[in-house]
Image 1 (cartoon, rainbow, N blue to C red):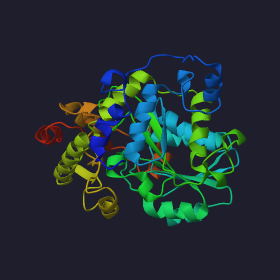
Image 2 (cartoon, rainbow, N blue to C red):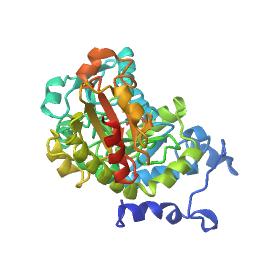
Image 3 (cartoon, rainbow, N blue to C red):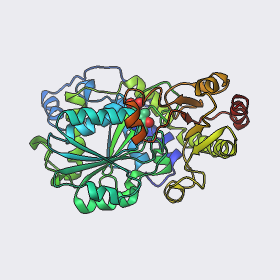
Image 4 (cartoon, rainbow, N blue to C red):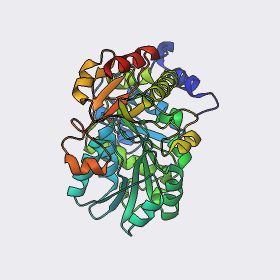
Amino acid sequence: MDKNGFTTTIVHSDRRASVEHGAIHKPMHPSSEYAFADARELAAVFQGKAGFTYARQGTPTTTALELKVTQMEGGTATVSFATGMAALAAIFFTLLKAGDHLISSKHIFGNTNSLLGTLAGLGVQVTLVDATDARNLEQAWRPETRMVFTEALANPGTQIADLAAIGEWCKSKGLVYVVDSTLVTPLLCQAKNVGASLVMNSLSKHIGGHGNALGGSVTDTGLYDWSAYPNIAEPYRKGNPTSWGLTQIKKKGLRDMGGTLSSEAAHRLATGAETLSLRMHRICENALALAQALSQHPKVARVHYPGLPDHPQHERARQLFGGLYGGLMGIELIDDLDVFEFLNRLRVLALATHLGDNRTLVLPMAHTIYYEMGPETRALMGISDNFLRVSIGIEDIQDLIGDFEQALV
Ligand SMILES: *Cc1c(COP(=O)(O)O)cnc(C)c1O
């Protein structure tokens, strides 16, 4: 972030990079290929000079979005992807090899858990730990450990990893520290401040915010010295070592694997990003009020929300997230309330997967995202049958509280 504030920087980002005709938005560039007047220039861009060749490796529109994410995260550079999952796949598959060991938080998004299973099938050793205490990582360490992965704020259980202590420990061990910041966004916490090497954001969620475009990003914070990392291929061991990791992620993750963000989606996500701070403040305010109301309700067994004083990591959230607690909460209904009947009574909330939208969305977890993995894994991950994930939107708070009240009968 430059000397201006978060929102000022983002809303003026395109204009400052000088868009043709004085346009205040970077245009959508639909070109698949980019032609050159000079053959030497063409060769130079293929050999690493900044520029565009084929849209699978990015366009001026995706680059403009990447600059905004870099500014928000206070990082050195960003690569965008078609989805958050494509961004995570690019990190794991381009930086890890068979025989390497990855330590991951066990409190993670269900689809990420599934991806780690795929990775294990290819010979990467994966250990899941309770990352709310950094000492559990120390116990899982092996000489082949290369990387640590955690969500900053876990989807859907809202556990908050021991982010800063893990950062210090990774530094002492020379490990790549990857933080999925999707639920906190760089507004609540720049992962750089807890020592992350790479930050992943699902742009489909709060950063885009409007439920109309998918995207993901990987930002290098500049903290990791990639010259110490054994898996960087020879062609990318050039220039400043702080850029090597992201170069490999971009080359292999976009060029070879092809999970590329389209210019159209990038444009929508960039427009959404302009109001991230406004939306997030409203969402967090709504979420806290709703969590407080529901935690008193006799039909609700438990509310998992970091803004409540009884949340196990409430104090950590208070210190790290600047007084905001995010827009996601887990709600466990009392046993004699039928989850499906309750959901069918809701009138304002949308029964939908997804999160970080302007609309409040609710999803029963065990029956949907966590269904395929079976009861044992669900128990390990703390997902009970009456666990509902609620992603709070920007609606008027009395309508949200009122909808729960009329449905909790
Ligand atoms: C949604 C989500 C992802 C995946 O992002 P997509 O853009 O939907 O692929 C990854 N991590 C977390 C924490 C998420 O909530």
